[in-house]
Amino acid sequence: MRTEDRMAPLKDEMIALRHHLHQYPEIGLEEYKTSALVATRLAEWGWNVTTGVGQTGVVGTLSNGTGRRAIGIRADFDALPITEETGLPYASKSPGFMHACGHDGHTATLLATAKYLAETRDFDGTVHLFFQPAEENFGGAKLMVEDGLFERFSCDAVFGMHNMPDIEEGVFGFRDGTLFANADGFDVTLTGVGGHASTPEVTRDPIVAGASIVMALQTLVSRNLDPMEAGVVTVGVFQAGRASNAIPQTATLTVDARAFTREIATLLKTRIPEVIRLQAESFGIQVTITEMTGYPVLVNDTQMTAFARQVAVKTAGAARVIDLKRPYTGSEDFSYMLEKKPGSYLVLGAKHERAQPLHHPGYDFNDKILLTGAAYWADLAREFLQSR
Image (cartoon, rainbow, N blue to C red; front, side, top):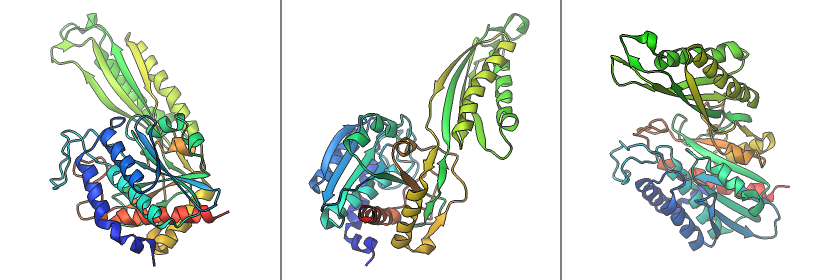
C-alpha cells in the first residue's frame, strides 16, 4: 500500500489544521501563535521539541532504532502583508495579512508527516523537522543556521519543498544545480536643491537624476553580462515630489537585482552602486545608498537531487515526476541551509480550478496535495535513513 493511502485517516484533521493556520497568519519573526501550535502538536505526538531557534523557529526531533544517520526536513510558516481576497470561509482573520504563498500548507504537510512517523516509527535513525520563520523577509533560514541549527541538530542532508500553482496538481519537479536566483536590493536617496518649477536653473533636480539612473541601470544586463547568461535589474520604487509646480529636494528609489550565479550576483552588486553614484554626480546630486542583502543563489546537490527524485518516483509514479527546464527568478532562503549541508529543494504542483499565482491576494493552497507532500516526506526520510 502506498504511504499516501496509509495516511488517509489523517486527511480531515490536517486540512482543518491548515485552515486554522490560514485564518491566523503571522508575518516574519512574529509567528508566536504559529510557533506555539507547532510545538504543542509535536510534543503531543512524542517528538522532542526545541523552540526559539532563529528567534521563532521550532525543531522537532524523533529517533528510532539504531541507525546513526539523520535527515533534516524544512517547512516555512510565515505569512505576507497582503490583504486576502479569496472570500473563503477560512479566510484570514488578521486584516492586512494572509498566507499568500502556501506556508500554511507547507507547515500542515510537515506536521502530517510528523504525526505519521510518530505513530508508525517506520524508520531507522533520526529525523529533524525544521519549522522555519521569516522566509519572506528576514532570512529565517540564515537566522536558524546562525543559531547553531546544524551543530545542535546534526544531520547528513537537508531537504525542502514549495508548492507551485502553475504546475499540474501532485506533480513533483526537480532540478540539479541552480533552482532559485540570488536576490539583492538597494535603497537609494537622491538629495538635490528644490525650488520653483519655473526656475529650474537654480535647482538640482533629483527627479531628472533619478530618471537617468533608472534608464542607465537598464544597460547593466545588456552591456555587462555575457549574452548567454541571465540577470534582472528592476527599479520597483521611484518616489518624489507632490506638486506639479515644484522641484522636490529629494527622491527615493529601490532597486532589485537577480542572478543565477554567484559571479553575476557579485558583478551586479558592484556595478549598480557605481552607476547610481556616477549618474547622480553628473547632475550635481548627493546620493545615499543602503544595501539590503537578499538571499544567495539556491544550488541543489547533484547526488541528493537524484536521490530525492528517485523517492518521488516511488511515491507518486514516474508519470508524476518532471525535470524542471530552467530555474526560477524568485529567491528562497533555503539556500542558506544548502550552503551548509548537502540536500535538495523541490517543488510540488498545486494547480486547481481557483489557482492564483503565489503572493496574489486570491491565492489559496491546494489541500489535495497536502497528504501527497506528507507521504513524500515520510518516504524520503525512511529511504534516506536506510541508505548507506
